[in-house]
Image (cartoon, rainbow, N blue to C red):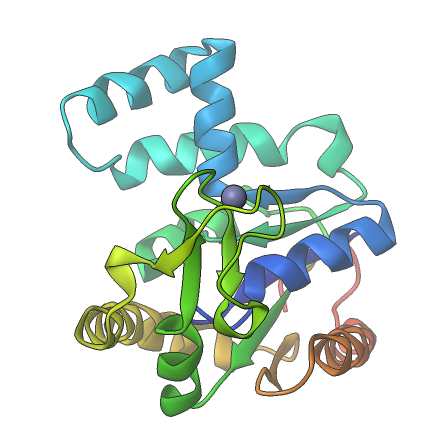
Length: 221
Ligand SMILES: [Zn+2]
C-alpha cells in the first residue's frame, strides 16, 4: 500500500520539520505547496506560468490553479509509492478536489498535530532571525547566529499580537477542514507539545494505526 500522508497543524506545531523527517525516513517525497509553486514557475510549465502571472500582480493563487499544480505534482512517478503533503489543502473545497485527484489510489492518511494555543504563542513569539543571513533560530540558541556569527533579532512578524492573529486565521480555516476529515477511519490527531523525537514516534505509531484501518486500494474510506 502506498503511504499517502496529509499533515495538518497550526504554525509553530513543527509540522514542516516532522513532514520532512518522516518523508526522508520512508524515502517518499515531501510535497509542500510553496515548493511546488516555486518549482512549477522555475520549470516554466503552463500552469506554473499562470501562477507566476497571478503572483506578479500581487494576488493570491486561486484554488483552481493551486489544485492543478498539486494534481500535476501528485501524478508524477516519484509520488506513486506515497508522499507527505504539507500545506495543502487549506480549504474544504481544496480537500474535495484532492479527494477527486486521489480517486483510484490508496486512501489518504490524515494526521493533525495539536498544540495548545499558549504553547504556540510561546514558540512563535520566541523565534529569532539572523540579521545577516536570515537563518531562523529558537530564542534559547543565544544571541549569535550559529551559521555566520551574525546578530539574532526577533522576527518582525512574530510579535505576540501578530502571532495571535495568525493563529486566529489558521483556526478559522482549519476547523472546517478537520471536521471534513475527522469522520474517516484514517484520521488521527497527535500531541505536538512534546520533544521532536517523541512527536516523531507518536506520528509513526498513529500512521501505523491509521494504515491498519485503511480501505483496500481504490476504495475511498
Ligand atoms: Zn547568520
